[in-house]
Length: 640
Ligand SMILES: Cc1cc2nc3c(=O)[nH]c(=O)nc-3n(C[C@H](O)[C@H](O)[C@H](O)COP(=O)(O)OP(=O)(O)OC[C@H]3O[C@@H](n4cnc5c(N)ncnc54)[C@H](O)[C@@H]3O)c2cc1C
View 1 (cartoon, rainbow, N blue to C red):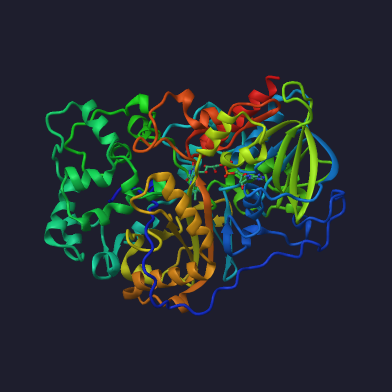
View 2 (spheres, rainbow, N blue to C red; view 1 turned 90 degrees about the horizontal axis):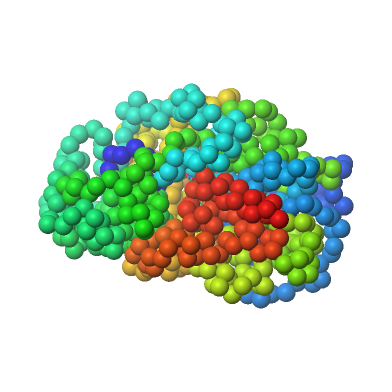
């Protein structure tokens, strides 16, 4: 419980029965400029584009972000066999069209330019109003100061050290990871003020509301003494955390690992450790940050791999069971990659990639100055530029002009502002969600489409909340809270960083941002069913419902610190990601087949002049995977 925070600790959970909200009316979402507003000279011959309008700056938008309204409806219509009026031919031709402006697609553009011998022309299409995909930036202007948070992809961090391709790309972009880790992050800032980690026990799950603070301060026993748990439950938690028991005596390390790989962590605690339900509820959300589902749907072996407790006395040898290719257990093997958090998370990587591709769009020259750089969106899609990023544009078709085996070009149809357009290229990289590809490319072989359909992503929500100040946190001596039964199962104060001209707020009276995490999973179902059900719930949840729950949760958790949601919350951005983490192999539910037969490998096969990227195609929800897959796709295309 007192482990350092990583994405893996960004936990989430079950919905509480919402009760009286302390809310006033819904917060107004900041709005975008009129798309038809002033277009800059030199704009493309296409109809006026929102991104060319004066003042277009999506990072400042609040309300429902991530998969924002307007970004996904056409994709669902395509799935439901909707057809659109005849497309207008833009007449534009490119060497490469990339569908998806996330890190994988942007990296693919970089690699293509680096590897193709000639100056190439590239068009990147993305359905969102901002580039970066999951690597999304949330900005707030609080009392005249810039405050930034990641709306998605949190940090450079992977279960494996970054390989040469991703590591070299970071170097090319000017990201000197060891130096930046040393000079920009102050992860002990809140601890230096005496603030600690806490657990919020909610009355719906545990019988009473109670915030227990001080995980780092003293014996666990003392902390739990204040918790609304039975004496037996408290003793069981202490034993799981600090005991040294071999729960599977008489088996070899490999035999134990085989068993642990076939039972969930929840089943391990319930059926092997024999704890009571309250203890299961206490641990339930511990896996949500890592996998977007609770301990009921994650193997005990994977939980051992990321350091969850209960295995200290079991003499499990280091190293995962290779054949199963456990990604997360890579932490056990290698210690994982370096870890670096920019204020906007890996949106900084996306911004650096865009600077590399279209220098005029992102002023500055270093990884430090990009943090406060204001992107000029009107520069992203200029006629004369070799690389163009076209936002608010969803591809609905990628079709070879002729036989895929011999065709010279691929035609891509996309929708923008309700109109359909076509454009052509010598090659296409599909770097969006892989499960959508069968709808874009219905002529793919049936086995490949089947495999792609299986790549169900994990939904999750990263919420950014602006507060008037930090006073309640200081009064309660807490900076992060694990809340296994609450609407958001984890929240914390914005990490303290000082990079370039950006400095996190220091004074207790300064406005500050809070990061909250929710995964809308459905306990008890197989993982992918949880994902599907969670996605449906997420898309049906209004901003007002999020707001009411956020106000209620922060109000209840921080009440003893004098927190008043009506007075203290000044803005909310809910980044919902119905298609969040890329699917990873889960030994509880997925067949144990050789790597070459896994759906992400079968699904990513090159098809004529179309190659497939995205972290989905690497079977791991990490930025290094997204980059490596962008590279692989480009190499495949350039191989002829
Ligand atoms: C909340 C969250 C937190 C995360 N935290 C981390 C972290 O800390 N560290 C880490 O390494 N990884 C993290 N990840 C994983 C993250 O997915 C990857 O690191 C990486 O950002 C994925 O990049 P990508 O380009 O593969 O996919 P995406 O970021 O999903 O980009 C794909 C883009 O293509 C667009 N697209 C899809 N279909 C179409 C279409 N038909 N037409 C046009 N555009 C389309 C999508 O909308 C999207 O913008 C996190 C993911 C989420 C959701």
